[in-house]
Image 1: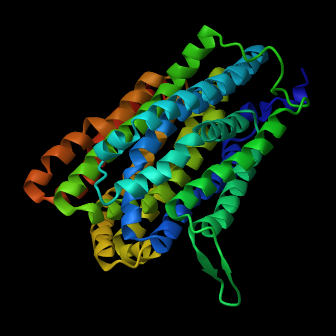
Image 2: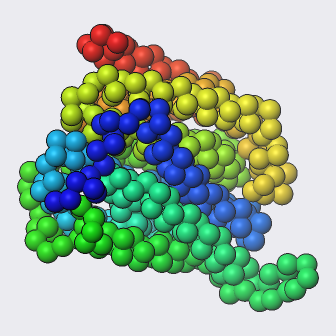
Image 3: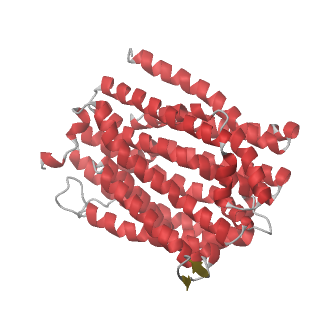
Length: 458
């Protein structure tokens, strides 16, 4: 196999330069991905009505579950490929690529089928009401019908990064966002007024947003397949790599379990948040949380961009036993992520009204979103540190620690807080639960990371 296509610079180039090289396209891609979701919300909030935002917020848990299974395959296979490339085990890396394709298809089909059968009960359980169920159902039916496309699209992006092509992954994401942004108004609104010209749209409302999402992913997926079919690449689609191998499936699922559990934990947390907010604040409070989530999502996605940039660097050097480089990339990534989440704190604490008005003009929902944003961002500066550390342990194939950190922040502490605090502080108790869990989980993260530094004498 040609050495020219092997990303050996991961083990030789300065860590800071590598992180910049990989981070910039990853961050652009993740920002584009966050804008992807935000654009849908903005058009739905202004093109349908405020309750449509609440209906959209109800779908978050189900979409998180879908993302969880996709992340288990995507992140698990991409991490394992990075490690195998570092070990120069190219045959196994090629087999991992083929197995990842089959696993994504199987999971996408099975999840969509089960969810469609039980869709209404699931949405009611997640916090839907008679006023919001129709919006949530209309959106999710179309999203689930395109679930295989979504799994493949996100999975292939992770694989492209692991194969040394972060810019290609970035281009796929940006293309998807641009296509979605163009299609959203065309499919959501009945009439589109640009000031100098007015023309008719499809008028499909929230269903139009879902169709735009799936269509944009489908177009980008075609391009990804073409790139990954290029025989000049070290790893590419070819015959004989698609037969599932038990040891590969087992390793992929084991390494991919932490991000899967993190997304599943997010699902359960959102369920409790939605139900708590519905009980103490009604449907408008659920919509307000949707706005808060979208705002913080931008900054979280930037941190995830740093995580994704760190992952192949840490994985490759861990496989090559260059532990000093592994630790260095971790420290730099933590510093950068902390800066990003500190900026989120500033926006959430001092400019919440401006953020809320981007999504809706409803005064009641804006007021609720402002309160929620200030509580949610109170201790946000420490979130970046916790996120990066969990991803780091996953990147160096230590899934046990990564799983524990994922569960601690989103499940072990947050859910009990959500159950207990509202009894004392009502709807504010739901909001207070968020920074409280961030604080406790950050302490645990510090202990685990300190032990790692001691082990490697750093």
